[in-house]
Image (tube, rainbow, N blue to C red; front, side):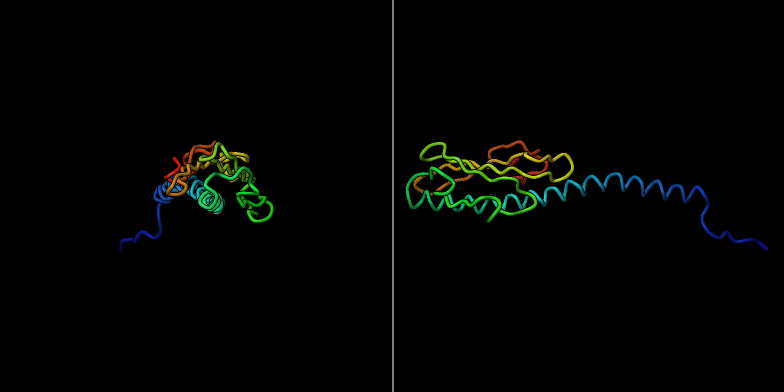
Length: 147
């Protein structure tokens, strides 16, 4: 009578462990980047509220607001309270241009606290056109329209 093999050999088990290790080495960094991008998306949402406020002021007054208070932007600790936003600031460049700068808290990975995302607004007769205009946050964490 022949004896039938039962179970796996040591080499087969080592191959399976090696494959799982390779998959984990690729998946974990990709997952970390994904979670940081999700946090940045929340930051961008808070920036969108500030952009709307500045745009409404420009449409009604015909020029960019001089201060955050005139723009209707509240302090970060009140309306913009979040674990991910360190600060949100508005600055008038001239009557037709303004910038919104958002600094993030430490988001994990290599996204350090204080890194920024900047929106630049250009006012015209049609309203305010916003562009994501740089900042120090690594491009791999920003949405596609900000890279």
